[in-house]
Every structure is written in C-alpha cells, then in structure tokens.
Length: 305
Image (cartoon, rainbow, N blue to C red):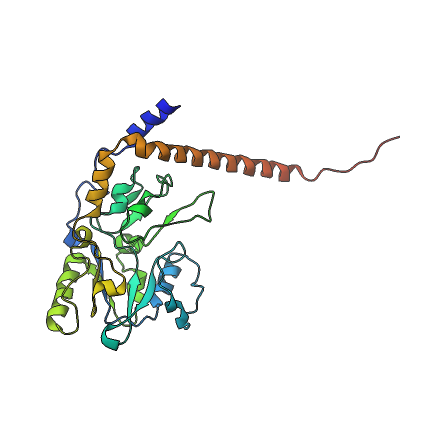
C-alpha cells in the first residue's frame, strides 16, 4: 500500500510550476484588473450585496443600514467573497473604508502550492478553482499571504474552496465587468486592463499629491496583483500587509521542489482516497434509501389460525 501511494504521489507531482491555463500567457499589463480608490469609498457595502447576488450566496446577516458591522474587522468567507471594513483616517479625518477580496496575483502562491493544479491562474487574469480536480488539501489557504481562500467545513460530503473569481464568467465569457464594479455608486472601483489602471492610478496621484500616498498597492507587491489600491493613508493602516515585491508563488514552488514528493503528496493522496471512499459510501446509502422507499412500508399481519 505504501509503495502504491509513493508511486502515485510521484506521478501526481507537477513537473513544472502550474500558473497559466494557456500555453501562451497574456502579458500582465493586458490582464483584467480592478483599481480601488480608497478616498472614494463610503462604506455603503453595495459591492457586497452585488457579489452575493451574482454568486448566489446568502444575504449578509447584518443589514446594510446597521453600522455595527464595522465594529469588528472581517475577512472574506464561504458566504461572502468580498467584505468592506472601516479603518481610522489620518489626523482625525473621516474613516477610510476598504473592500477586501482575492488579489488575483500575477504569480499566485495558491496556484503554486496546489499539488494537483486545481487552482489556476487564467491568461485573462482571474484566479479560479476547479472542483473536479481538488483533493481538499487546503494548501492554497496556507500559502496565500492575504488569507483569502476559504473552505466549506460545514459541507462534509462535497466541500469546496470558495473565493472571489473576479466574476470570471461575466468578464471572460460575456465581456462584462465584475458585479461589484457595476454596483458601486461612487465609482470607487474601476475595471479594465491592468496596465491602463496603473497608468490611471499614477495620474491621479500626480494630479493630487496632497490627497494620495505616492504608491500603488499591487503594482509590485508579491510580483504584482490584478487588484490595485490607491489610498490617502498608509496601506498598513487599512489592513494591507507589507509583503515585498518578491512573488510568493516562486517561494512556494521552491519550497515544494526542495522536499520529497511523498512528504507532501503522500498525506494528500490519503485524503483524496478518503474523500473518494466517503463519496462512494454516501452514494451507496442513498441507493439503499431509494430502494427502501420504492418497496414501501411493510404490512403488519396477525397470526393465522
């Protein structure tokens, strides 16, 4: 059994870093991007509502008119792919609101950490997840420097990794914009090609040097991201980590390449085999239940004399 697992682990281990889903990757500047101007966000959370509706997620438990939701900092969950948090402004100024979601990195750590290439960086920009391939190892969650991917722990049969996809279907297949962008009443969100967004962001900073920090967050962070921010206050003040310019995907792949395949994939194969066994058991139980229902209730009869 151990020998079989070892052989399967070696066979499954990717031979190269799985980043793009196409043989000819698109230039980072031409990929889809999203620019958030934190000076324009008013914390209305219309983006949250639009995101939940388009992704068929539950409505937020706290009404949009209830400001108590900002008393505690939130992060994306399986029921909310984007959330808005309130942060202190500078020198007693009005609070700053920041929309948090997947950063859609140019070289995603989640993609490089996935041993079966279930997490994919598409040529168009969005990072998406393939449930048919995923084995539920959750290494993507551990690898992400922004703590974005979430897991359906409440779904024991067929749990999914959930996160923002930058409305991949609408953007790539239909040529539209993400639902959050269309819903924003103050136009704090701008969608377009990443290179064009960086140019626009830089121009806003040049035109208003007293209004913005002279930095575009995401232009170089972790090798660059599709989600970009400009802000009137330092980025660490609004919960964005100082992650440096080195692509975390390179670091993750280097780590996985330096250790034995069995050390990483052996336990993951066991998890995969367990999930397959669990699905078969659920299917068998469902089949028995259907047969029982089809046969109908048993008749009670007395003793014949």
